[in-house]
Structure formats: C-alpha cells, structure tokens
Length: 226
Image (cartoon, rainbow, N blue to C red; front, side):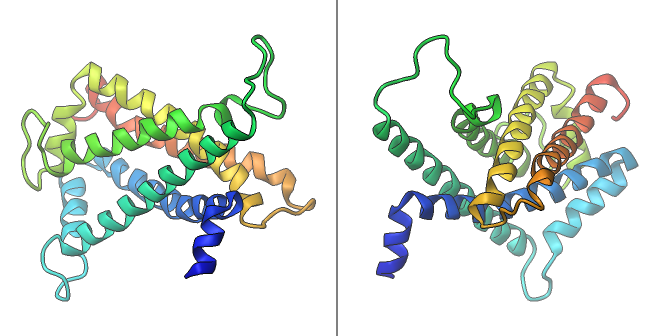
C-alpha cells in the first residue's frame, strides 16, 4: 500500500492513473455513442436497448442494479481522472511559476492540450447534469421512466439544450484527441515504428465519437427524429 501511495504522489503515478481510467472512460463513451445511434432505428429499438441495460445481469442482479453498479464504477473512475488531472496541473504551475509571455504560444502545445483542464471540468459538470437530466429525470421537463426515446426527443427539441450538447461534445473530441495521443506514451506504448499512427488514430477516434454523439440531437432538433 505504501508503494502504491508513493507512486500516486509522483507525477508519473498520476499520469498512469489518468491513462488507465481514461481507457475505461473511452470505452464507455464509445459504446454509449453506439447506443444513442439506435434512435435512428426508432422508439422501439432505443427503448428496448434501455430496457436491456436496466435488466442486464438478471437474475443475479435485480432490475437496474447492474446498471447502477456500472455507473458507480464509471463515476469513481471519472472523479479519480479529474482529481489526478487537477493535481498534475497544480504541480506543473508550481514548477513553472512564471507564465508564458503574452503573445507567445507554448512550445509543443496544441489547442487540445491547452484546453484539457477546462474541458475536463466542463465534461465532469456535464456528466452530473446528464445524469440529472436523463437518468433521474430531476431536471427534465417531461421525464418518463423507461421512455428513453421520449426523453431524448423532448429534451433535444430545445435549441439551447442541443447547442450546449454540441459544444460539450466538441470539448469531448478535443479531450479524447489529446488523451489518446498522450496516453500511448504514458502507458509505455511508445515506439518509433508505431508513433506515426498515434495522431491519426487519436483523430479518428475523437471525430467518430464526437460526431456520433451530436448526430442524434441535431436530428431531433431538425425534425428527422421525433
């Protein structure tokens, strides 16, 4: 346990933890995106998919238990991911007390990397609101338990909600791009033979997931779904 805590206190330990939780979260958002696209197949398909998620693990788990267990694991992973990121940002700022001179861009920096912290915080806040919106229905204007298609089509008929969702998915794409690209090196998957594929792979995954997420709300807002 002492060795684990010692590793975590180091910057490399935090980066490894971020990368490991990042792999879990990337897998989740990819499959979540695929689930959302079932809206294009109609209400029956999307609602059936939602029912499958709530009933998975039966009869070992009662209705919804396995889904909530999965949510708890993902929330813990997200919290750990965000906390490690904030701690790394604080360590980095303390190690470099003088800010970059105005007008000069940081070396070896990209817009995606410079927005990782603010984007991560925004995504964390979005996850909280997303759960209150589509899981518990706390902030949904007309929530129907189990009515997944109804809930998403009602929500995304609002231009403001759809616009905010698209903006957040843009930040998700940037976050995925930089996270996947840098995660290879953190996890030791850094080799001259494969490095040339890191950026294209990160780009493809980030674009596919971000675009995949915004297709459904835009289709609802435009009247193609609903």
